[in-house]
Length: 165
Image 1 (cartoon, helix red, strand yellow):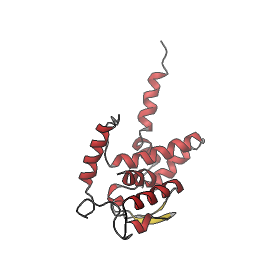
Image 2 (cartoon, rainbow, N blue to C red):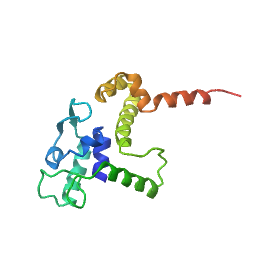
Image 3 (cartoon, rainbow, N blue to C red):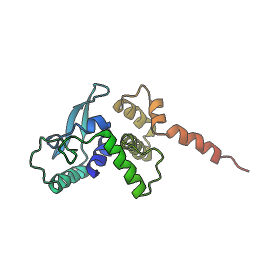
Image 4 (cartoon, rainbow, N blue to C red):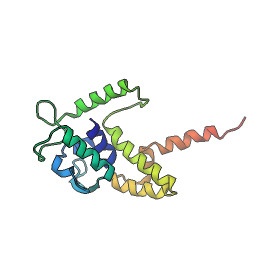
């Protein structure tokens, strides 16, 4: 699960694309190319150096012998289902008492996008990062991306805090 969650929050890929990854694609790689199933678009994904270490650790811990195998297999040797991943996420939410309203496979993609925006915003590039994220996520506009990562809701909520009594 840690590899799946890591891949999700470090690549921004949708679950359908994550489940197609094999070890040869991600192990000891700085980047890889994938054709997104939903959009049919080509995406080049870069793998963070720190996350590369986690991939190696998972590969070793799982005693992988064939790097052409998919990364996310169930106990029967088939690729894990999206439904199973969502059930595991619900178990994780309960076990760790996570305060996430809708915790599902899509949470990983939203987390990736939100984290990029936060880091870029701290550097004073928040608005520019929305344009880049919009392109990376195949959104029609930065306004869609803003809504997707709940910035608009956060901004609207902040208005109430600015009122004085």
